[in-house]
Amino acid sequence: MSESEFDIRRATQTDLDTIKELADSHKHELGFVLRPALARSIAREELLVAEKHASVIGFVEYHHRQDEQTTLYHIAVAPEHRETGVGEALINTLRAEARSLGKRVIQLKCPADLPARSFYEHIGFHLIRKKPGRNRALIVFVLFT
Image 1 (cartoon, rainbow, N blue to C red):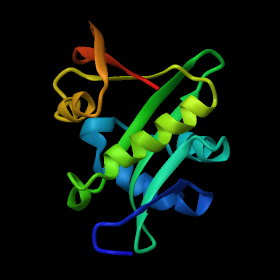
Image 2: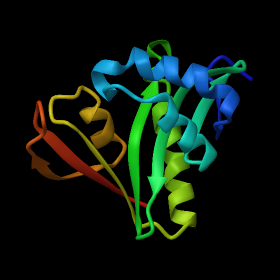
Image 3: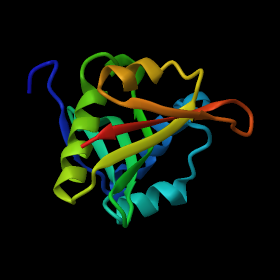
Image 4: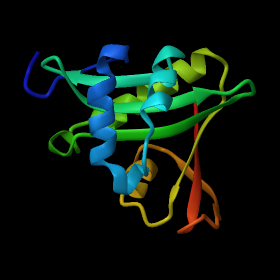
């Protein structure tokens, strides 16, 4: 594996501690992510990780709904691995999985002032609406599979 290479794979329960630590380090962006929720997503096979040199460097948590939509709950990449294609690779892997299951869109909601907004727009998400949130305004994005 070269310096820039990483693998995307389905998360396992042995990844839970590392995923939780990564989520906690992104608390400002993600909010408080509960360990039991992450464990359920792993058990449902709805959590992917990016791994480099046997270390988890990013993750995406999602849910394939019964309709034609996949909901993206959380995505995080370790700061030292940002802008290296990790986040985009996680989304592209999720997109391919969603498409293979007949899902037409991936939807996410995030705070309107979130710096990652430009990342979502860069990789093809489209803003469909803004809505009031509990503490700050939210925006809803969709990505067509």
